[in-house]
Length: 462
Ligand SMILES: Nc1ncnc2c1ncn2[C@@H]1O[C@H](COP(=O)(O)OP(=O)(O)OP(=O)(O)O)[C@@H](O)[C@H]1O
Image (cartoon, rainbow, N blue to C red; front, side, top):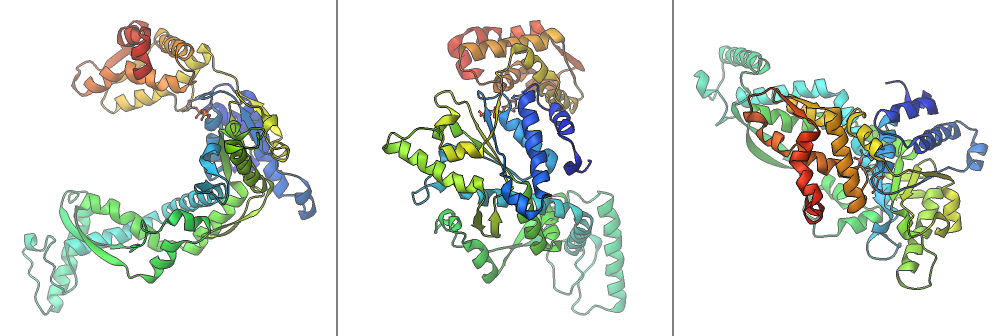
């Protein structure tokens, strides 16, 4: 992939077009916002302080691509991404999740992301270490008697004293085993391995969430003090490989470097998607839930303005994190938000409801389109799944119609409809003799026409 920082807004939109149908205005807005963030980071310090971060407010009904645009953008830019619901938070000082926890969650996501990448970089080395550990289990080299392994099978007995000759034999056996291991002959062989487990006995007793909200990480503090326990496990070679790989890879990581990179990435590239912002946008009536929603807005303000939050990995500045607020704003308006908060979400984009034509495109065009997903799944069984144009149109028509009659859940409706249309095929696939199955309008009607027509039934099934 080209370096994301060099992609122009136009190129970013073109990338997003591969996955999301329509919603051009929203794609443009996020592309500009990301580009501006990169521009702002390159400014002299004096200017960096003057240029305010420009967060986005996405306004539109449910299931039309708001989250999907943000998520794809994050993927494209290698950004840690977090989706939260504004309604889940309570004011700081009250029981519940407070707003600052979103920054800690973002950092956690960032740490996992960086860890995964770095583990991938040391994969080859880790695989070699795993091979040694499996060989240790298959052909123990030490004098410690090993009850399991394939020693017995190969007629080898362990003696209290190993002669030079015996050691040579063991080495030879080990190399023979290595070859067999590499050729995949031993994948189902049972072996016993020892796995180190960190002891964290206090978790679950103490409410770790609340402590973490204070930036205190008990499990980390205790984890390093408590002895590591070892657990023996009997597994097949194939299973052992899966279990041991992350353990060995993690041993090769420089954890300080992981944390440094993760903090940097969360601070400079992080994207936080705050859904249901409309639900906390209320002009205060001066009592009850309204006051609490206003409290959440007040807590949110410094975070989107730029502040420092303590996390268990260290302090995190929120200045460059991109916040994308989202909501339908049916019952409230963006102007119902606190004025200061309105000012922090200056880029407003409206996403349009999806038409029946959009549904046809969503079913077929994106790189990960639902029809393509099913085709790939059935190809595994050697079956070619063919959707005719009228088949796709019929699915779109039914989904669109259901949205009008029941509740409008946008493109999400397509998933349930397609799932039901293909249920029988998915079930019978392994047993059918024909190698290609055609899904046309007739087939779609046959499968779900009756359900779709029955209001009561479809509200449960589709
Ligand atoms: N315009 C679109 N193009 C392609 N797929 C779409 C589009 N809109 C929605 N989808 C698909 O529908 C699903 C739901 O969309 P998404 O999560 O973006 O909803 P949303 O607009 O964020 O709604 P909510 O506010 O309820 O979360 C996703 O799986 C997404 O892939």
